[in-house]
Length: 288
Image (cartoon, rainbow, N blue to C red; front, side, top):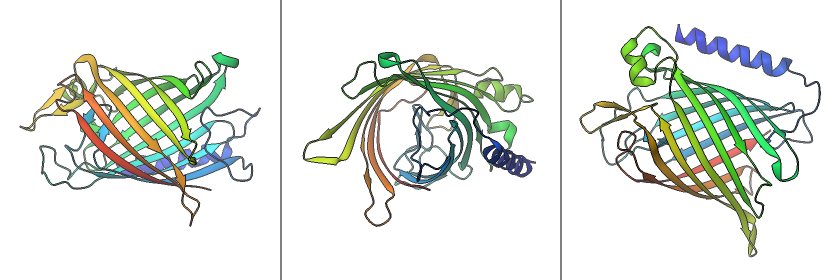
């Protein structure tokens, strides 16, 4: 049944992508680079992270992950994305099994802007399905609706304040205990307040730098696993602060975008994560 659902969703996304024609030209909030003013752009990305940290949770208990994705961006602002995560290994076995940790996320989103001058607002609204193909759907699959806002001209000088809200709920409603543990059919929310600071060094203008800072409020969604393998539902509280630093450059052989980054998490709520975290990642991105 899950295979049929995945194939059906893929077919629907493909049909919508090629059937969509914009009535008026819209400007995406964060457009994917197009090739020769093409009305669409297809992007392939391969990312490796030394830890899979998701909204404060250490998903694989210090294990690395390979996270490839594909994105189709249309000129009218619609985006169709398939993202996956494949567990790697680490020097510690940890308390989380990676046997069933493979994950696929399917996202449909719309990006655009409104406002003018300093009130110019980039926005993204969308829906995402979290699929764990090696686990029964009623036990694990989740969905979310989200909105992301950014104000690139509000402060200026490279500072971009932003806010994101994510409302999650269980994909299936027949298992009441799973509903409670995973956020329930009405789910829980995640509030993400942060900013980016973008700059370049005069000695290396070809290496744009980005510093990011986020503070996150968890409104009771998601679970953490303790050292005994017991799951705990997240408390309603400020869960963590995330610090990030990244740059990017073009691969001289292929023209692909290479993005290395490092992150540090200051954990504030034990029901999400008892430990502060440090990890790094490397992305290789091709756009057609």
